[in-house]
Image (cartoon, rainbow, N blue to C red; front, side, top):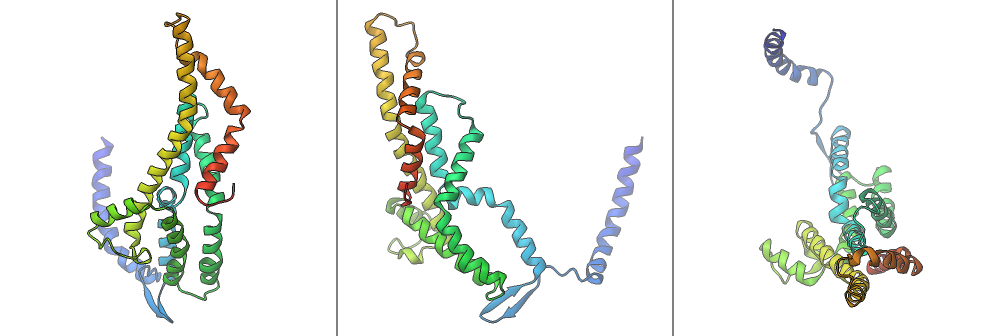
Length: 253
């Protein structure tokens, strides 16, 4: 009985609020989208900068996957878990945590460059927000270009209908990012294949032994899993995988 009455009251009050909103905004000086000229470019109001910062914070998970080494690391760890024959151990949260920590370590030089040459000058009001963003883009671009393959970059340039003879420094960021992600996927599957081979050999040997003994009803995975875990632990597999992943990005293991 009360729901129709509340709905009618809301429909009656909503237009009034919409009419009063501009007056309230003007009265309290809540100008958000204001841009002023500054030396060497344009600067934005503090409220607009806060709005841009909050928007950027909501995009951090997506930026983490397409701008850093996170994608390659988490895919390799997932393939390694599958090669060991483990379904839920380590759990997905643990793999994501390991990938995140390795990403922070591998990307540390990039973060330090952005902090020293973009964030600190902007915080000291030595450059505008636009200049700081342009400066912060440079180390990320260098990192992505170093990891991007020529085939993937060529394919994305064709998709974007850009000249394929374009110099690497002139490649637009919206073209470089998908090329970088495709290159990361290719490299991750190549590393995963190399990790899968020794465990596949163990499975084949155990299956051959069981067939020769006539125990065809016994699953080879049940017998091979302890051997794979033992070999992986004795070889200090987790440290080797982390060092190999760091070395693929040019970081010292």
